Image (cartoon, rainbow, N blue to C red; front, side, top):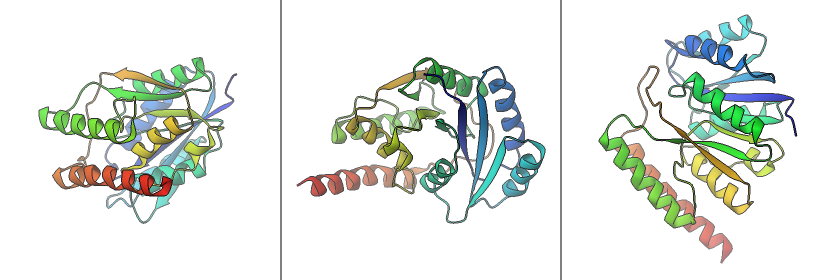
Length: 232
């Protein structure tokens, strides 16, 4: 199987100071892959000039589209981008942290392994606190949902469009990545985790803090209870 077009969904949150350079580096990196591609920039209720910068990029580059998510939320932005994607190979990723060589690598894995979900397994964190928080969250998710995957929130995530259940995810916030992994297991989609060693943030500030991390731990438990009650 060969893919005809790759759609890359990039949620954008307060990244007006660096998104142009990042997108240009992505475009240069993917130019070495002989598959047509598009970028879908989903401005995620940003409070800076991200929307204006992205609109200027769309005027400059033929393969760039811009959407605006007024409500905000990682999951909402991902879903909106996937709904407007035209490719038969789909990808979404955290543009604040994804290096161009990593995006290229995972897409190459996807083209070499058709009918497979390709996802990043990040091996580097900013500090020991983030490493510990990530470990605890991944252990919680693995145990609650019997998952074999390690980096639940790791992006890029790349998958074929005909994996329909991954195009129709429901979560609006950060739990969409957990839902993604749960669906892969439920639908028996093959998953290949690719180790990623780069982790430096391109710019802006992370939205992850003690409060958001705690909400994710509680959210995973809430999702488990909801699924348990639905199946009983």
